[in-house]
Image (cartoon, rainbow, N blue to C red; front, side, top):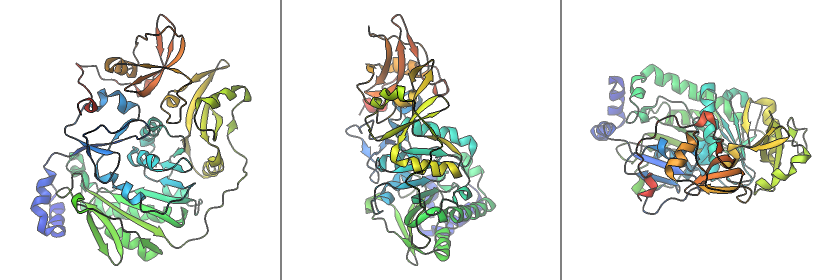
Length: 457
């Protein structure tokens, strides 16, 4: 590891320096977080104590060869970062919250927030780096919620949305010191100049996004680094330039999490020699200054074309009666009706990538059900007949290869594995057309298959 890094760590963690350095050579913990609307945690799993839906695994499975991963039943995520849930629970609860995940790709914290938020809330998942937006959008689609907007904008683009958000999560780009154990490239990219550049960039991000947080709203700031300049010093800088309240998060001693306190400001640090997880820092603050909240007109002319009346039967495809349906590029999209004014306001200022759940595609005056609708947590299960597949056929389906359907019923059918929907086929009798998205297909060859991790628990 870089000598300048070791020098700072020796000074920063003098009493635990040897344990700290040795821990970076140890294998990383294996963890994931389940989607509670699709998948129940199996019995006898070792739960991550700070996350109700997080679990540790004893060994790393072949995630690519698990149909449930590709259907949004769980998300492979580092355990320490799931501490977001504890910060979320310290906020005063309200309905109709508008939440921004500013640096959202690849989607771990966005999908976590979707599981924590209520149906009346709206998540805006943003990623400024255009090349990373597609994977964010894919992971959001797989999670299956319609109360979400995906966009791609610089933090400064949100400045005109003054006071709009009840909660902003800034999981800031950082020097990545907490990734050293599981990503050797993070070590190669580390330098003192880079850490200084990260600190400066983080302050710019916080400065740009601060006006769009409503008075009384919450900011969660996190990094995956140990560097005080990117963590505690940025928190102190924010407090010196704004009126804030630092919110304490209750801890349990068994977690190994450190609380850092300075001048009434609290931060929470995960160190690899003390926790079963990687390096992570998080702080929760409440905004006490600023102007009134952003005023969204109750009646606003939508920029989105509504669904033609002849397709009204599609409303029965969902279990949510408060959804509205829009047409975009020959697709029908479901989105919460009471969030349409917010969507219109966002579309005036931001580059919207997607919103809601694509339900179906128009084709020759017919409706073809969309793959994303199959994965929706609000899908009405009585609309399409369901066929259960075994592991090999489920993977063949996700490779977009031909599978046999043992049913005399012709037409659109939903295939599933372990009770979790995988997508649609159209049964023609002698064969079934596979409608799994080409861009999402599994590309690796199928070896001799092992039972998925949840079958052995």
